[in-house]
Image (cartoon, rainbow, N blue to C red):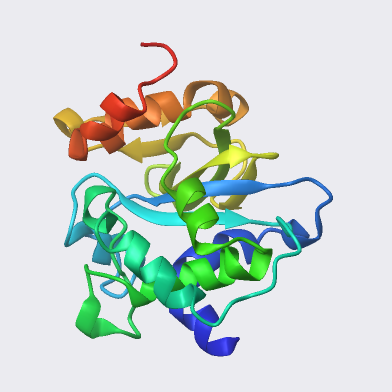
Amino acid sequence: MHFYLVFAVAVLEVVYRSEGALNLDENWQSLLFTIPDRKAPARSVNYLCSQFSSHYCYMGVVFAKMQSARFPHEEDFYDFWELIHPLYNEINWFSLSIVYTFEMGSCCNYQSTIYKMYGQAKGLSPEHFFQKATNFGSAGKQLNSIKAVFNSELCINEITMVGFGQGFLKFVGGVPDNVFVLRSSKDNAVHAFEHSTIRAHLTFDWFKLNVICEDQPWICVQFPPLDS
C-alpha cells in the first residue's frame, strides 16, 4: 500500500487529509482536477501539470465508500490500461507520477493505479470505473472538494485542485473565510469566489466552460452544460 500511496499521492491526499472522509455513511465521490502552475515547486503536481496543459489536468474519480461486493480479477489492471490508453490524452489525464518518470505526461501505469485504488478496491470493474471516470455530464455533480494554498502577501486562497461530484464540500488547505482565487488561462483571467457562496458559483458547468473546454472543446459538445 505504501508504494501506491506514494504513486498516487496527488489524488489521495484530497481524500485522506479530510477528517473521516473514508468513514462516511454518505456516498462521497468526486472527479478531481489539478490547476497548472509553472511557479509551483518543481516536483508538485501543479508544476508537472503545467508542462502538458495550461488549463487543467484530470486526476480521475475517487470514491469514499465501497460501490459493490465485486472481487478483484487478476486481469483488471491491464484491462483498464487498454480502456484508458486511447482516451487519456483527450481528457488531460496525464501521468504525473514521480515514480514512473519514463511515462511522465503519458499513460498508463498511473491511471491504472488510480483504478486499482478507487475502482477495483471499491468493487468496480474496469469498464464500470472507466464509465464513471469519463462521464463529464453535469447532472448530479457539484463542487465537493477544494485544495488551496494561502497566499499571505495577497491574503487570498489560491486554488490548486478542485473536485465535482456527490457529497458535502471538503476543504484542504487555505484559510477559512478568505477569498478563493482560481487562475484561468482563458484571457489570463483571475476568478474570485467568496467562501460562503463558492459552491453556488463555482459549478461544474462553469468549470467546464471556462477551463476544461478551453483545452478539450469536444467535452462540451458531448457533455453540454445544463445551462446551455
